[in-house]
Image 1 (tube, helix red, strand yellow):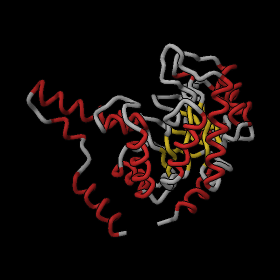
Image 2 (image 1 turned 45 degrees about the vertical axis):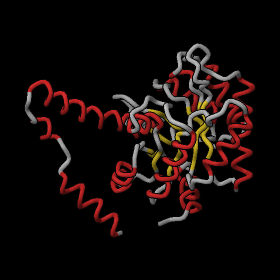
Image 3 (image 1 turned 180 degrees about the vertical axis):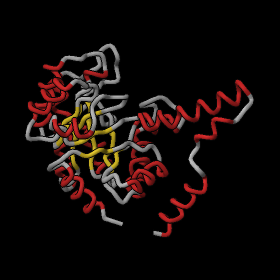
Length: 276
């Protein structure tokens, strides 16, 4: 098993050139399956993890998040990036403490977003948002400096889809020490190209969480370095579960199980991983 330092170094190399997909598992089993397919890195999903615990997105504590991140980081042989939401604090000092604790889990990277949690006032004021990224950077540097920091601006998925303001924030987060920039919700070629160009040469993460005309090749052509899928794999799994359960309840038959993954194949895969 590679060390945390090995995984962090490998994660940084992935951000130096090309374009890679970083899918989002929600538990150890889904993480190991994605790893077995050949994905070079993984990312947690706060939504997928929350649903597995029977709560809505963000409905869990910092302690629960840290335990989850540590579990996936220890189980996976590839780098894991943490969806660390807003750092579980408003003040920069609180963000710094949370980031220190997250870095100690062995994670390869983490993201800090500027969503306040208040739908009426969804984004932290600009100066405070930048100070929060600076605090995260300082905490990582103090811990050794090898955890990759992603700065997220949430306007497009929080009711404030202002491209100019999003770019202003991302550029400031880059200057504050973010290694990678991320604006979930941008989707058109024009928006993506504008963000990539504005923060170059820093890498950009693109979220594709719904059917899209863009392929990995298309995203690479636009200059995107990293593609994540958020909670969409978890939603896909829940979709199959819900359809099968509804069929049993509504019709009394079990035909939806025809699409289920074969248990023998799953057992074989995970037995092999345990032996390895």
